[in-house]
Image 1 (cartoon, rainbow, N blue to C red):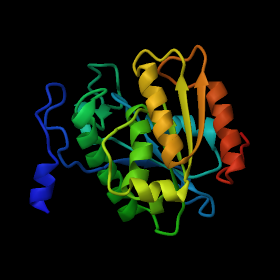
Image 2: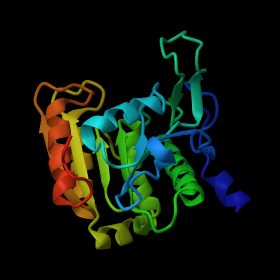
Image 3: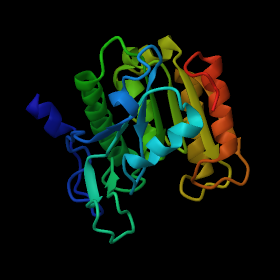
Image 4: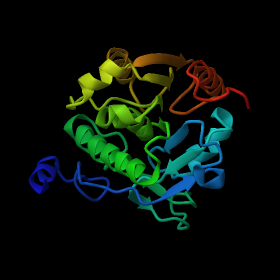
Length: 247
């Protein structure tokens, strides 16, 4: 196992200390009311934030998306700025899932697999096996909302990726994922200046081949989320019997 882990580790990063593909572990999470157990008969959302953010970010967003479902919002394991230091203006701390903001090629493949494995391990240790789980992520978290499906297709009910992008390297369970036709919502800004448009279209094409995809581009939206997008997500959740669609 150690040899396999070492083989998956790549080059040294010049942005975040460490190597692309270094094994990581999720140790911090914020749960919704009741420790994420207030609505046990509804799917639980697994919130995955983006670069330089923290577990508070998507937790706040959930009141616009599925306020009556439970959630667990995870903190990425790579620290950019400690909580309370304020150097970058992130008083709750700034964290990353990857060793760069938007890694590419093998760097992205290695980091995405390492992070998705850590997330799936956290789910196995903290969420009952019979609880439906729906990953929802933004940017880096959007990559991982899909990557966890690729790592463990049977575990996740559906996924929502917002301004995500594709880790293009093939994984062993990609064919099994395609067979399951898991519902995925992919939303992205037509004016995104972080993720190139061709990357968004490549991600959508991959998702079309491997999932039951609903994809929507939003005019005027940069690398961000918006109220129109939230409305579409609520409708999609209602159609897929995941949430009520009601605010």
